[in-house]
Image (cartoon, rainbow, N blue to C red; front, side):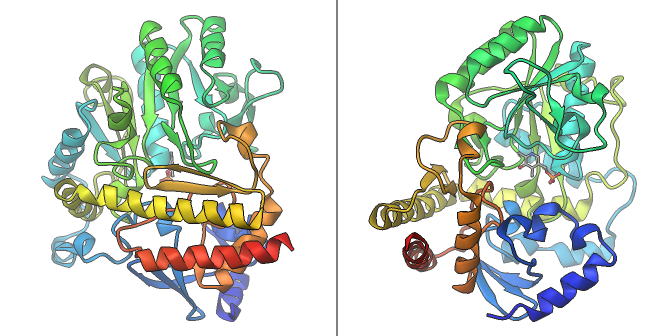
Amino acid sequence: MKFDQSKALFEEACNYIPGGVNSPVRAFGSVGMAPIFAKESKGSKLIDVDGNEYIDYICSWGPMLLGHSSDIAYQGILEMIQKGTSYGIATEIEIDMAKEIIHAYPSVELLRMVNSGTEATMSALRVARGYTKRDKIIKFEGCYHGHGDALLVKAGSGAMTFGVPTSSGVTAGTVKDTIVVPYNDLEAVKRAVEENKDEIAAVIIEPIAGNMGVVPADESFIHGLRKLTEDEGIILIFDEVITGFRVNYGGAQKLFGITPDMTTFGKIIGGGLPVGAYGGKKEIMSCVSPLGGVYQAGTLSGNPIALSMGLNVMRYLRDHQEHYDEIEMKAIRLEEGYKKCIQETGIKATVTRFKGMLCLFFTDGAIKNYDDVIKSDTELYARYFRAMLQKGILLPPAQFEGLFLSTAHSNEEIDYTIQATREVFESLVK
Ligand SMILES: *Cc1c(COP(=O)(O)O)cnc(C)c1O
């Protein structure tokens, strides 16, 4: 397999774009090779600029639930573009989108559209702070909520110290208001709340962590978190940018039977175009400008083309919820296959799965939090990734990312992926 065109484009890109990419994971840094450049895609397949064809398990990091270049997503889009792409004043489709999300998420009574998941979480936190008149927030180690300053923080030394920035350029002042606790550890949250009595505005969480591989929340933990935040007047924000419309039509909150105060969305709700959204209880969302004093705006927010594509996908999913079971069955097929490969080759690895989200970690033992996740052998993952790429399978180019499936992935493709995995594992354990 040749990557000459990709290599040439990467060299050129580095002259004009920091690191040659517009989002760090695309640099393939953690799998030790130059990035590949995409040319086109259809269904489960992605073709790079050298003409190599892959079964794609990135799926644009989640939005392509119906596969690439889906006729369902594209319906009516060209006609719409001919009428105009952005007006700077209100459009009817914004109501349609709000209604569609609110219908699927009873916890959401008012909804604001933005342009990315990052904007959604940043805005939700601002609203939570404005509503509670409190400054501090709690986040969980290993959860990713986009690149807002207040969220680029990891735990400091000692369980209860304030976090430290994970990015330069994030100020000490910002970090001082973010408390980082381990995922699935209710006692740690209780201690943090106790030590900052009446100062915590919000707890933000991925109800199924999908940015440190895949780590589901324990039932008792997530229900305990709802009770604790309710008792303490703290806004519970479910970041469903990944899980929303992916794990099922009503998201992780429906599966857990939990009503969060606020929810953030992204990825699938744009059907492949740049979209985000945040919403929640009417009382809380009434703080948002122009109703209330929390300012938040966007020149291209609620863009009609992006919303139209997202709506095409969401309406289809609403009427075809059987696809969620279908995707889960495929994920189970892959999980079972992985487990067999692990057993039969003796490679040190573990699979986690929740509904249609799954991850292969090169470590053994239970995976409950970030400390468990980072025990993984990332060098081994890099070798696995490169060998699989040679066999025409594009996996996430980093150990700590989940695999994404779509309705377009066939059982044959999954079986081929398992067979390829077995061969690669055999060569890796030698
Ligand atoms: C992807 C993601 C974000 C950030 O969304 P962007 O559109 O990349 O800004 C936020 N939260 C979660 C859970 C995500 O997976």
